[in-house]
Image (cartoon, rainbow, N blue to C red; front, top):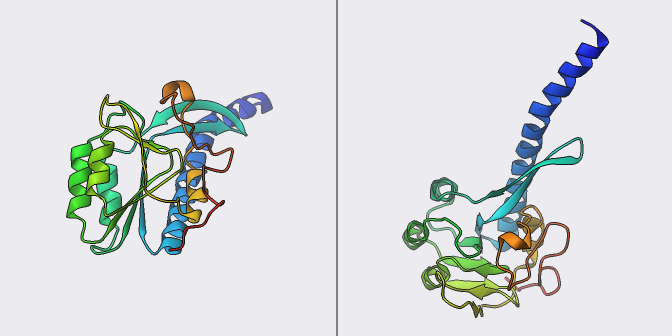
Length: 202
């Protein structure tokens, strides 16, 4: 086999396997960040975040796609939490995101421990129902809530936890054209709103 063919095979193998390795490492980093957040807050962190996944090769982006956990993903994650553990549900839902809000509300209402809804930016899909089933709400200064096509309203709920920053940095948001143009967003390239500026006293 010639060196040229070896190089071609190596490149094709890298094209297939390196993005898989990158996604696996990202999932591990997210798990560690969520555990650290939970340890700092004394809770179990459950992300329900609409985000943009970025797949790269040798440092160069080759694929971007929008991602949202399914209700089954949330159910499996919640199954790892102790039945009576305090629950921090980190939510980012722009308008018209396909998600089973009724199913999520039912899961949260059946949880034995207190539920805190953490909203960095917005919950515009089933927002009022989610707020209504939470025991407590923590929201960014410009966070907004709405149900369906109704007009969004400011969401009062207090400061974001200081431990939230490393988590949000691993969930980059889609381009603004694909989300609501009315609200600023967190992005992995900068500090999320409020986080790290004022620390909530747990």
